[in-house]
Image 1 (cartoon, helix red, strand yellow):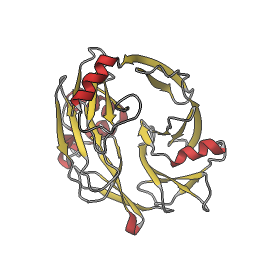
Image 2 (cartoon, helix red, strand yellow):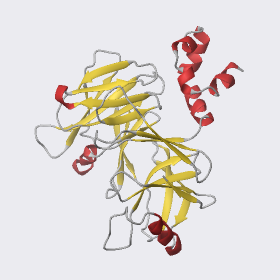
Image 3 (tube, helix red, strand yellow):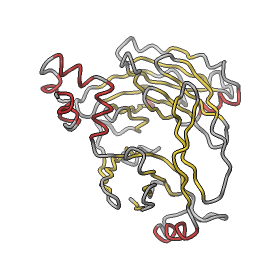
Length: 306
């Protein structure tokens, strides 16, 4: 009963000290990964948008009913570039002049800092499933080489970086470590459109793996949506097939007239960037510097822009 009641409370209420420290039972419930997942399912679906430049303020887009989106600018206790976000509560950002990355909770104002090992790096943040430890992962070129190395640091400890064995990856696939990563449920992924593999790092075991991408054929306006069911077995499952027919593409082109980059072939370029509302809505970015974005309900085929 307590679990169900707490799961329906807003995150800012749950993370306030007076709520977390009512008793040991409440504290354990709020920290439990199953509770965090349930609390997110009970919350309104949203999308955190970060930009490559610190000149653009990060945004949170709350997706309610179809044709409705509320965009809120996120004011962080820093003016630096946001690199990643984990569990909707911890934000990773960097200070290049000090070669330091910070993990901050905007609600509780808690912050942990770690010096990073090399210049020209990529960072990501993830939480180990069983230990609940938060870990920062950094990839970088070593000794000016073409391939990348990978290191990991556990927050709350000595801040030391541990080198991850990436030699088990083939050299072409090690180049993927130079791409921007993203994290889902304790696993960090490095994908790329032109490679037949996705690189995955399970932060709990600290082991890098090569996962074959599903075999797909380019069919013009047809987009297949796949989900990686199990990162350990590499099993993929096809969820939907979306057909951007000519009429739909022309309607979307008119909708964003003046905002799109002119392409020599095929009109505007749409890139899937997020999957929200328990798999009901897929969000696309359109070929422009800071948006716009399209939300498509895969069941009703209704679309709206924000």
